[in-house]
Length: 358
Image 1 (cartoon, rainbow, N blue to C red):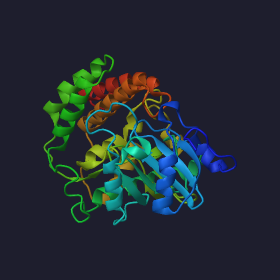
Image 2: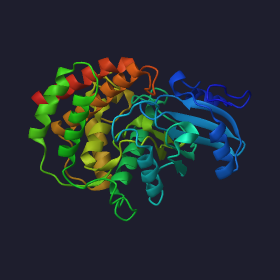
Image 3: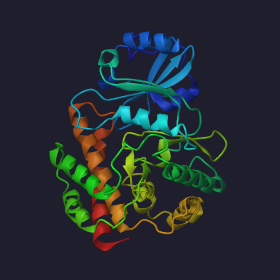
Image 4: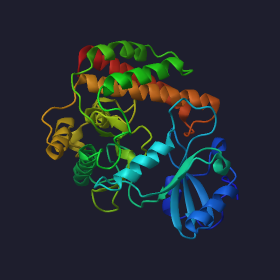
């Protein structure tokens, strides 16, 4: 079997809604994978499809005679240093399984490139709901606020987790988080073969001079947004937080600010709700959402224009990287090129907030 030839008769309607045929750039022979599944899990591969979405690490649904599993792997081709760290994804989820943070159960990790060409890991396939839009248009108005409560609860659980007790004391460097992150993403912007984006350049200059005096450490997800979690099929409860590639030890307000970006972005930018009538939609305001999080964490402070500008700077650089990988043909999303315009809009919004405040 190869990764572009799924077996007949094994794809459920649910799988079809979450998956697509394997993209040309991510096809691979499955012979070694089938052997590994048999040796490690006693399973026989029946079908393989690529999961919908994904900008960084290609993700696949494996249908076997022992159930369904999810495979996350590095993309093929030349990669930026420290990017696409599937080993870190595996490590943090394995550690968080000891806590009340909702994560999928990871099963195995291998660095053996002879299997699929890149390192990868396997985890359980969770069945539930993924909400692709922050407006929650698929739900009735009266059900939407509870989903935001569930999201705030999941983020609070993550930030309250004792990272030392679960063996993540070497997962990152405590303290000086924002300065280090600004340096990292500025360097990536300088070295990535991207297009001109003057607002990123302005933010790279402004941010280091406005880092708040705050030394606080928690496990940061790095990409905590609504569509990176699976909710219970009928309850407003998160079953699993997904996509841990950008996770590290960092400042919790960085996660919180990133999580709030839909409130300050226009719909044209990137999952934005700015300008929409949130009350009519049944969506809590940003202040109300921040209060949900603070009630669960005991915080008395909150995010500032710096935190939001930083988050916009970072995601703009990441999206420019997606554009660059798309030009090389190894981005995980078929619409990678379209993110160039989003990167421009996000960076310009970030510079607007840095310059003028909210």
